[in-house]
Image (cartoon, rainbow, N blue to C red; front, top):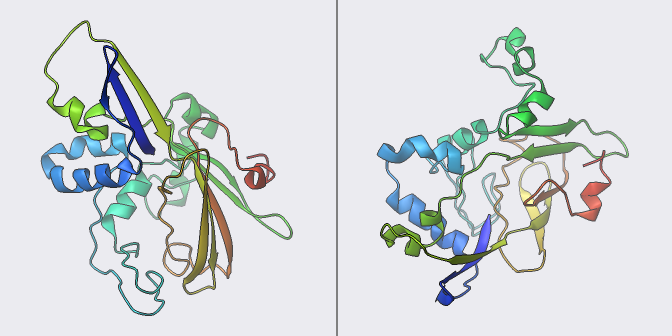
Length: 236
Protein backbone atom coordinates (compact mmCIF):
# COMPACT_ATOMS: atom_id res chain seq x y z
CA UNK A 1 0.00 0.00 0.00
CA UNK A 2 2.96 2.37 0.55
CA UNK A 3 4.72 3.77 -2.48
CA UNK A 4 7.35 5.84 -0.66
CA UNK A 5 8.24 7.22 2.75
CA UNK A 6 10.43 9.98 4.17
CA UNK A 7 11.72 10.04 7.76
CA UNK A 8 13.15 13.01 9.69
CA UNK A 9 14.67 12.46 13.14
CA UNK A 10 15.12 15.53 15.38
CA UNK A 11 15.09 17.76 12.30
CA UNK A 12 17.61 15.67 10.33
CA UNK A 13 16.56 13.74 7.26
CA UNK A 14 17.25 10.03 7.75
CA UNK A 15 16.19 8.82 4.32
CA UNK A 16 15.15 10.45 1.08
CA UNK A 17 11.97 9.68 -0.79
CA UNK A 18 12.39 6.61 -2.97
CA UNK A 19 9.42 5.42 -4.96
CA UNK A 20 8.25 1.82 -5.42
CA UNK A 21 9.53 0.69 -2.02
CA UNK A 22 6.57 -1.72 -1.84
CA UNK A 23 8.28 -3.95 -4.41
CA UNK A 24 11.48 -4.02 -2.34
CA UNK A 25 9.61 -4.52 0.94
CA UNK A 26 7.59 -7.39 -0.52
CA UNK A 27 10.85 -9.03 -1.60
CA UNK A 28 12.20 -8.58 1.94
CA UNK A 29 9.13 -10.29 3.41
CA UNK A 30 9.44 -13.20 0.98
CA UNK A 31 13.09 -13.73 1.83
CA UNK A 32 13.13 -12.92 5.56
CA UNK A 33 9.84 -14.30 6.93
CA UNK A 34 9.67 -17.88 8.14
CA UNK A 35 7.02 -20.24 9.45
CA UNK A 36 7.96 -19.16 12.98
CA UNK A 37 6.56 -15.67 12.26
CA UNK A 38 3.39 -16.95 10.59
CA UNK A 39 1.20 -15.74 13.48
CA UNK A 40 1.60 -12.11 12.31
CA UNK A 41 0.90 -12.70 8.63
CA UNK A 42 -2.86 -12.26 8.87
CA UNK A 43 -2.45 -8.84 10.53
CA UNK A 44 -0.24 -7.51 7.71
CA UNK A 45 -2.13 -9.25 4.88
CA UNK A 46 0.83 -11.39 3.88
CA UNK A 47 1.16 -15.01 2.84
CA UNK A 48 3.81 -16.20 0.38
CA UNK A 49 2.64 -17.68 -2.89
CA UNK A 50 2.77 -21.46 -2.61
CA UNK A 51 1.96 -22.97 -5.98
CA UNK A 52 1.91 -26.37 -7.56
CA UNK A 53 1.07 -24.99 -10.96
CA UNK A 54 2.22 -21.71 -12.49
CA UNK A 55 2.58 -20.31 -15.95
CA UNK A 56 5.16 -18.84 -18.30
CA UNK A 57 4.66 -18.93 -22.02
CA UNK A 58 5.61 -17.01 -25.13
CA UNK A 59 1.90 -16.80 -25.95
CA UNK A 60 -1.17 -15.82 -23.94
CA UNK A 61 -2.13 -18.54 -21.49
CA UNK A 62 -4.74 -19.10 -18.79
CA UNK A 63 -2.24 -17.89 -16.21
CA UNK A 64 -0.91 -14.66 -17.72
CA UNK A 65 -0.30 -12.66 -20.89
CA UNK A 66 2.62 -13.64 -23.08
CA UNK A 67 6.16 -13.32 -21.69
CA UNK A 68 4.79 -12.93 -18.17
CA UNK A 69 5.17 -15.25 -15.20
CA UNK A 70 2.19 -15.75 -12.92
CA UNK A 71 1.19 -17.81 -9.90
CA UNK A 72 -2.48 -16.88 -9.64
CA UNK A 73 -3.97 -20.25 -10.49
CA UNK A 74 -6.42 -22.06 -8.20
CA UNK A 75 -3.56 -24.09 -6.74
CA UNK A 76 -1.91 -21.00 -5.22
CA UNK A 77 -2.30 -21.67 -1.49
CA UNK A 78 -0.95 -18.22 -0.63
CA UNK A 79 -3.67 -16.51 -2.68
CA UNK A 80 -6.36 -18.61 -1.00
CA UNK A 81 -5.01 -17.80 2.47
CA UNK A 82 -4.90 -14.06 1.76
CA UNK A 83 -8.52 -14.12 0.59
CA UNK A 84 -9.53 -15.80 3.85
CA UNK A 85 -8.30 -12.77 5.80
CA UNK A 86 -11.34 -10.87 4.49
CA UNK A 87 -14.67 -11.99 5.99
CA UNK A 88 -17.77 -12.42 3.85
CA UNK A 89 -20.99 -12.12 5.84
CA UNK A 90 -22.69 -14.35 3.24
CA UNK A 91 -19.93 -16.94 3.31
CA UNK A 92 -20.24 -20.36 4.94
CA UNK A 93 -18.40 -20.87 8.20
CA UNK A 94 -18.47 -24.62 7.47
CA UNK A 95 -17.80 -25.52 3.87
CA UNK A 96 -20.75 -27.20 2.19
CA UNK A 97 -23.19 -26.39 5.01
CA UNK A 98 -25.68 -23.88 3.63
CA UNK A 99 -27.14 -23.06 7.05
CA UNK A 100 -23.74 -22.02 8.45
CA UNK A 101 -23.48 -18.62 6.75
CA UNK A 102 -21.75 -15.96 8.81
CA UNK A 103 -24.85 -13.71 8.83
CA UNK A 104 -26.47 -16.18 11.25
CA UNK A 105 -23.82 -15.12 13.76
CA UNK A 106 -23.18 -11.47 12.94
CA UNK A 107 -24.49 -8.94 10.43
CA UNK A 108 -22.45 -6.94 7.95
CA UNK A 109 -23.05 -3.77 9.95
CA UNK A 110 -21.75 -5.35 13.12
CA UNK A 111 -18.69 -6.64 11.25
CA UNK A 112 -17.87 -3.06 10.32
CA UNK A 113 -18.14 -1.98 13.96
CA UNK A 114 -15.60 -4.63 14.94
CA UNK A 115 -13.06 -3.10 12.54
CA UNK A 116 -12.35 -6.40 10.82
CA UNK A 117 -11.55 -6.71 7.14
CA UNK A 118 -14.76 -7.64 5.38
CA UNK A 119 -16.75 -7.44 2.15
CA UNK A 120 -18.67 -4.19 2.62
CA UNK A 121 -20.70 -4.10 -0.61
CA UNK A 122 -21.76 -6.78 -3.05
CA UNK A 123 -24.30 -5.90 -5.73
CA UNK A 124 -25.27 -8.18 -8.60
CA UNK A 125 -24.97 -6.71 -12.06
CA UNK A 126 -27.37 -6.58 -14.96
CA UNK A 127 -27.86 -4.52 -18.10
CA UNK A 128 -26.91 -1.75 -18.08
CA UNK A 129 -25.68 -1.74 -14.44
CA UNK A 130 -22.31 -3.24 -13.61
CA UNK A 131 -21.85 -5.50 -10.60
CA UNK A 132 -20.00 -4.15 -7.55
CA UNK A 133 -17.68 -6.01 -5.21
CA UNK A 134 -16.07 -3.90 -2.49
CA UNK A 135 -13.52 -4.99 0.13
CA UNK A 136 -12.97 -2.89 3.25
CA UNK A 137 -9.66 -3.70 4.89
CA UNK A 138 -10.27 -1.90 8.18
CA UNK A 139 -7.83 -3.81 10.32
CA UNK A 140 -4.32 -3.98 8.94
CA UNK A 141 -1.05 -3.47 10.76
CA UNK A 142 1.92 -1.78 9.11
CA UNK A 143 5.09 -2.42 11.07
CA UNK A 144 7.72 0.30 10.79
CA UNK A 145 10.42 -2.35 10.48
CA UNK A 146 8.67 -3.64 7.37
CA UNK A 147 8.65 -0.19 5.77
CA UNK A 148 12.29 0.76 6.19
CA UNK A 149 15.39 -1.02 7.60
CA UNK A 150 16.08 2.07 9.75
CA UNK A 151 13.42 1.06 12.25
CA UNK A 152 14.62 -2.53 12.37
CA UNK A 153 18.09 -1.61 13.65
CA UNK A 154 17.14 1.32 15.87
CA UNK A 155 17.89 0.64 19.57
CA UNK A 156 15.53 1.42 22.43
CA UNK A 157 15.42 5.20 22.71
CA UNK A 158 13.42 8.04 24.22
CA UNK A 159 12.80 11.75 23.62
CA UNK A 160 13.08 11.36 19.86
CA UNK A 161 11.08 13.56 17.50
CA UNK A 162 10.10 11.76 14.30
CA UNK A 163 8.45 13.23 11.25
CA UNK A 164 7.19 10.51 8.92
CA UNK A 165 5.57 11.21 5.55
CA UNK A 166 3.88 8.31 3.78
CA UNK A 167 2.78 8.36 0.15
CA UNK A 168 0.15 5.75 -0.65
CA UNK A 169 -0.50 3.71 -3.76
CA UNK A 170 -3.91 5.10 -4.70
CA UNK A 171 -4.59 3.58 -8.09
CA UNK A 172 -7.20 2.17 -10.46
CA UNK A 173 -6.99 -0.35 -13.31
CA UNK A 174 -9.12 -1.25 -16.32
CA UNK A 175 -8.55 -4.84 -17.45
CA UNK A 176 -10.23 -6.63 -20.35
CA UNK A 177 -10.82 -10.39 -20.44
CA UNK A 178 -11.96 -12.40 -23.45
CA UNK A 179 -13.33 -15.30 -21.40
CA UNK A 180 -10.05 -17.20 -21.51
CA UNK A 181 -7.14 -14.83 -20.87
CA UNK A 182 -6.52 -11.21 -19.96
CA UNK A 183 -6.04 -9.30 -23.20
CA UNK A 184 -5.23 -5.78 -22.01
CA UNK A 185 -4.98 -3.57 -18.97
CA UNK A 186 -4.30 0.08 -18.22
CA UNK A 187 -3.54 1.58 -14.80
CA UNK A 188 -3.95 5.10 -13.46
CA UNK A 189 -2.36 6.61 -10.36
CA UNK A 190 -3.36 9.57 -8.22
CA UNK A 191 -0.86 12.28 -7.32
CA UNK A 192 2.24 10.06 -7.36
CA UNK A 193 3.34 7.33 -9.72
CA UNK A 194 3.31 3.98 -7.99
CA UNK A 195 2.17 0.42 -8.34
CA UNK A 196 -1.18 -1.33 -8.26
CA UNK A 197 -1.16 -3.76 -5.30
CA UNK A 198 -3.83 -6.04 -6.75
CA UNK A 199 -3.64 -9.55 -8.19
CA UNK A 200 -6.05 -10.12 -11.07
CA UNK A 201 -7.03 -13.76 -11.11
CA UNK A 202 -8.24 -15.55 -14.22
CA UNK A 203 -11.92 -15.72 -15.14
CA UNK A 204 -11.62 -19.45 -15.86
CA UNK A 205 -10.12 -20.20 -12.45
CA UNK A 206 -10.93 -17.38 -10.08
CA UNK A 207 -14.05 -15.85 -11.60
CA UNK A 208 -15.98 -19.08 -12.22
CA UNK A 209 -16.02 -18.94 -16.03
CA UNK A 210 -17.48 -15.43 -16.19
CA UNK A 211 -18.23 -14.12 -19.68
CA UNK A 212 -15.86 -11.72 -21.49
CA UNK A 213 -15.86 -8.18 -20.23
CA UNK A 214 -13.93 -5.34 -18.65
CA UNK A 215 -13.04 -5.18 -14.98
CA UNK A 216 -12.42 -1.89 -13.16
CA UNK A 217 -10.65 -2.23 -9.82
CA UNK A 218 -9.17 0.38 -7.50
CA UNK A 219 -7.33 0.71 -4.19
CA UNK A 220 -7.68 3.71 -1.88
CA UNK A 221 -6.64 4.48 1.67
CA UNK A 222 -9.54 5.82 3.69
CA UNK A 223 -13.29 5.31 3.58
CA UNK A 224 -13.91 7.14 0.29
CA UNK A 225 -13.68 5.88 -3.27
CA UNK A 226 -12.16 8.68 -5.37
CA UNK A 227 -12.67 7.04 -8.76
CA UNK A 228 -15.43 8.99 -10.54
CA UNK A 229 -16.44 5.96 -12.64
CA UNK A 230 -16.85 3.60 -9.71
CA UNK A 231 -18.59 6.18 -7.51
CA UNK A 232 -21.56 6.01 -9.84
CA UNK A 233 -21.95 2.26 -9.39
CA UNK A 234 -24.61 1.43 -6.80
CA UNK A 235 -23.44 4.01 -4.27
CA UNK A 236 -19.81 2.90 -3.84
